[in-house]
Image (cartoon, rainbow, N blue to C red; front, side):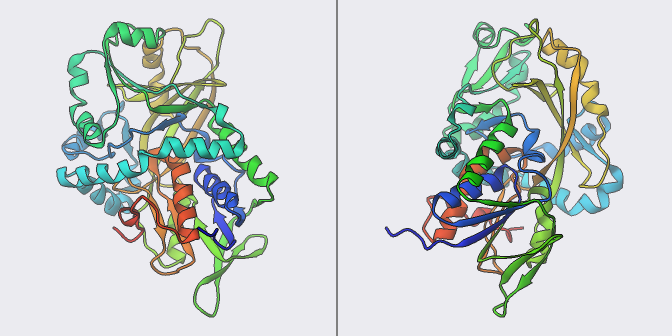
Length: 419
């Protein structure tokens, strides 16, 4: 098969999805330019839990969630928080979100997600090889732990979806769990382990590896904010107008995460996209500190502890408050005593407080595909909690579209106009 004719591709967004897409397209001979007002990999990509979970087939909204939402919103320790002043703007998204949790919708969404997640780790391996960064991906799996069998039984619906998708996982008894993670409190007696997952102990390092490979091969990055688009006589976007310059283009990819909604609107597409603000605290690593070998979800309080290169990272909570509200670290700081009980010996020194913007659609699926309005515009955003995990496979799918070749994954479920 002949290689596609090289094109001049402009990607707006230099987070992990934009970087993965840029390097993949460049490897196929395209002339690629990245544009972002922030340094590459420094926004949402920076602060995740570092997990690449090939079994991530459970949508955020599942059957019965709507019954629990009122109680969750009144509980100060709940993983879900809504800023009430934002509720009027959030309402259309929230209604779609709760509707996506209906039984038939959740099953369909899980099947569609599985088409992406099944190949996500292999896609990461190929991408990391392009960047000479395979060593950054650690094949240590993904672990969830529970205090007892009753708590584990509460995961039956999630496990049913994983079974339908053919996801490999193991039920761990107490001895097996503590052999795998001896530093975890003995209060946890049951584990759910997904071996076919990888861990990135410094997500920023992966972003930088991809960016370095991209620029070393001639890729161009402009740290500029996009203002608008110019359109040619044919009505198609012909240039990106930024705060500094006008950049001509052949093909445009919108991969700006939570900031993609306004860009898509300027290009004629209305998308149901909001931001699930996520928080993390970083605890200093000490010689006497606890042993933790992989990112671990603690069931009950619903937070993740990850053994990052610079210390233990606590990721917790979803806050629906848009892009403009000030961060509120109240809830995640209240979890610190509980985190220390779950992982005895956790350092008392907090070295970083961080908040990022997960770009989330109400049906937990990213937007990947061609614009229905402009033939030379492609979309790659809305990955929610799975931006890191799905970044490489997204880059491959965008490369398929640019090349005009058929993909093994049907993209209709991820279309921008599905809402």
